[in-house]
Structures are given as structure tokens and as C-alpha cells.
Amino acid sequence: MLSSIKIWARNLKRDSYALYLASRDPRVPWYAKALAVAIAAYALSPIDLIPDFIPVLGYLDDLILVPAGIWLAIRLIPDDVMTECRASASAALQRPTSRAGMIAIILLWIACALALAWVGFTRWPRSAA
Image: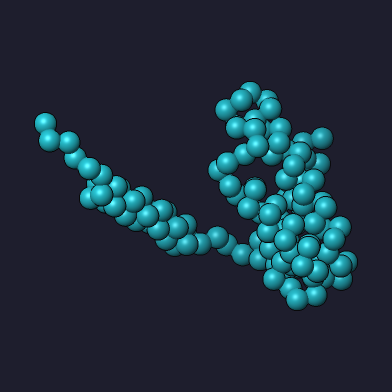
């Protein structure tokens, strides 16, 4: 049973990336692209319908809504396009990951946080005590 869950998770990861590739393909209808972008935004968003700190229910929406949305988006994409995108996604997932990219994203988040703190500090009215 554990191996089938691992296979399912691996396929879900591949299909998520394949949806990204399909959303950039001109042969995909606009409504399928919109759904793919919405599912990706929901999956990557820190805001959930049910917050994750609520026991059991917090992760239940991620376990049901994201795979269901991916399944629906895949059904809306033409089969030949999805086959090509799955092959491209499988090849891309075999490549090694980039630590430089991860570091760049982390530095970007830190820079944004520092800029926001600077703006808040310079614009916040100070009380004369």
C-alpha cells in the first residue's frame, strides 16, 4: 500500500508540473488554462479554505481539493497535449534541482521583507514621549 501511495504522489507531482506546461500551450482552451492557474495558485498559496492548524480538517482540503482540481484540469486539456506535457514534465523532474535558484528565491523574500520593514519604519508616525 505504501508503494502505491508513493507512485500516486510522484504522478501528482508530475501532473502538477505538466499542468504548468499545458497552461502555456496555445492548443489548450482558455478555461482549462484558467483552472490550471487557479489550482496552482491555491496549492502554492499560504492561505487555505480551512487553516492547517485545525486538526485533521486543516490538511483535508489540501488532500481533496488539490488532487480533485488537478484531475478536473487534466480532463479539460486535450489528450495529445497532456501526453506531451507529461513526457516533458517527467524529463524535467529527472534533472537535478538548483540550489542557486532556491537561494535566489530566499534572498528575494528577505529583500522584500526588509523593504517592507524599511517602508513601515520610515512612514509610521512616531509618538513624542
